[in-house]
Every structure is written in C-alpha cells, then in structure tokens.
Length: 133
Figure (spheres, rainbow, N blue to C red):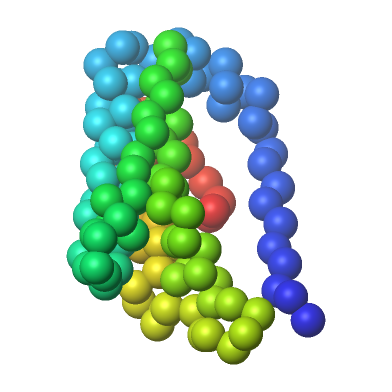
C-alpha cells in the first residue's frame, strides 16, 4: 500500500498577503535560497549518476528557474530520454538506482534544507512561522 501524506495550511491567505508586503531584498534572498538548493540537488545528482558512454545522463540534469514578483520556482529534472530507466528501473527487472543516487533523493534532501532556510529568513524579519512541511 502506498504511503500518502497531506498538508493542511491554516492562514494561507494571510500568509500570501504578508508575503506580498515583504521588501524586495527579502524576496531576493528567498530567490537565492531556492536557487542554491536546486543547484546543490543538481550537482549531487550529476555526481551520483554513472558517466556512461556518452555522458548524456549527467548532462541531462538541469534546473529551470522561474522568478516572479514574489519569489522563485526552481524545477529540477532530467532531459535525458533514458533517465527514467535509471530512476525507476524497468519492467524487465532492472532495479532502480541505489537510493542515495536518485534525483528525487537529492531533491528531497535539499528541499528540506531550503524550507529550513526560508523559515529562518522569514522569522529573522519578524514573521511567525509555525507547523512543519
């Protein structure tokens, strides 16, 4: 049975309104935190992937950043057409990559660090942050 989880946000509308009022330097610092987390996950993934004959598995791991007026979205993914075979295995019995070397493993670890840094940033500016992600 697949494990599921849910996140409940209390006061999300209030948080969005407060975030819209934050100064640009706070927004820019948040962007830096997000960007650095995505790049750290990319580098760790590339280092964990095998070189292979062409190096395309490693070369395919990219970060796409989408800044906005209020923050940043960073997407980490692989453009290598065969990355899914390494990440998830095959129907013919090839197991997925060892847990420490998968893209999702590195992304999850860096996401947790990113959330902690963003929380500290908000708290340093007098915002109260409660709950856990």
